Length: 234
Image (tube, rainbow, N blue to C red; front, top):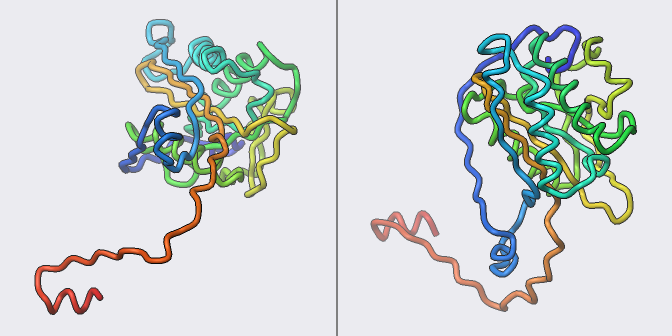
């Protein structure tokens, strides 16, 4: 129940996630399908400043988000969706929103223009695979031009103060709209229990040139161990 008033903790699960990273100029040259571009990525560690091993901190999180914005060279007001770490804990959710708000306020005073959610509301916390899962979710969302719903949200945790923040919790699938000339941009956060914080800024891929007309004939390769198996495959 990430960001919900009834949020009472994390549901842990297991999973594996894999992405392929490639330099943008090489991917464009090779005519690859590009789901999203990583414009900026930042890491820090605030473990020595926390009140306890598992307690998150506003300063460390806000600093890593602001650093990613700076490295990406983007205005926070052009980021219209954030995939939060979103562990649904009474302590973690308010701290995360406060940290994001602090980072965004360095560039904008606008309110409730940026959707926020967490894939943990779908599949739980995948531990070491949690961050890359959020990256995949946002890359696919950017590619398809839609913002997925964050589930199990009915009433915001009052400690979040969403009304005065740049954020709203997106509770239904919606078309991703941006201002004219502004590409779809998103942030993705992942925060380790021991104090390592990570944030990346994603942007939609550049428009690719058309691949040209298809060939009149195509080769379909089939492989099997026996002629009978080949017949079945055919």
